[in-house]
Image (cartoon, rainbow, N blue to C red; front, side, top):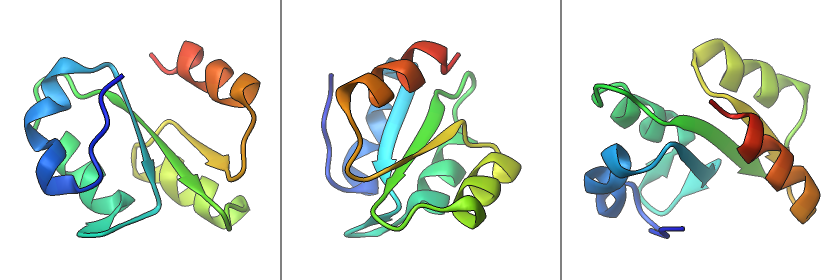
Length: 88
């Protein structure tokens, strides 16, 4: 598992992973910015967004824009594992 806290610090890693998990709001952007960066990768990894205020609106928006899933914080290890296993 690779961990970066900013979008800028993560750009170079996007080709090396099959799934990206990010919070809905990051220090230098949002999950939409991460999704835009993923669109620049030839075989983009799946995007899972986490949020303490996750709800149907966020879930629908993430899926409609090309993300894979939303995990409501706090989430269990089992929830995260299920999402990771099914994300590609």
